[in-house]
Image (cartoon, rainbow, N blue to C red; front, side, top):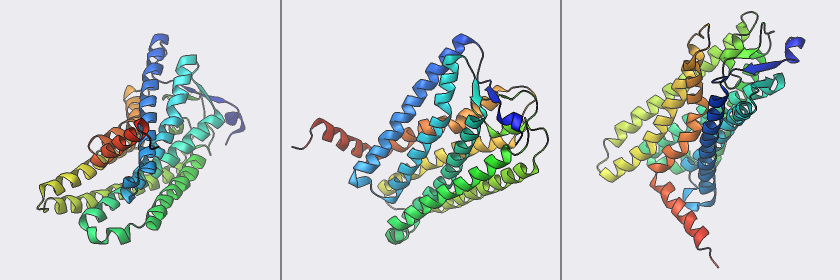
Length: 310
């Protein structure tokens, strides 16, 4: 790492330099952040307080909501502050911290989504063995492995990204410190970083293939169910997860694989919003709107607040 680089700040160009549009952006992002905050906190509260939701699926969902809450909190509040202050700067240390936590949370989320697909596979394809396979200890271990994999990837990725000096003006054409944009500032190609990115993409593709195979088995089993109600319940728990996975991974793949344009692109900004802002905001809606257990738990929580036991 170059000493002169470590003492400088990065300029986040964001969405616009127009003052009125910056205020509009701040208000819009504040509304989105509050929706994500309330939605994910609600899921964490319901899955913690309601004993009917103390099952492996909701244990992983609580972890996912915590990840989403942290992921959107790493980028959006800073972007709102910069827009309101009309000062799109972030310190070198702040950029390093932001990159580390984005990688930690995003990688952990991919691993956790893979575990959640396995949970649905066991629940639907092997229901009689579900209790023994998805024991509480096994669930805790799988969640821990997800966090460990995210931590290892974040350490390697962050160290490789900032291991070479950066040349020219430190302008990042994003609303946060995005790794592909930071790599474009490097004075020379960093082979180590390219290897880390390649390894990360291979692991992500492996997770995606594993999830696809799981869902092929799940849907083939569901279609054979004689009960229409059973098929409906199975689809209501699986389809939301499939939507979340597709949205999160497809936007993330595109951000890292496609070549960066020579001039700032609004497409890059839009894609980054789709994997850092949209999933944490829509996940609570996707998992709760079609989930009858969550709806019942919410009604029970409302009743406990309105009519507390004496």
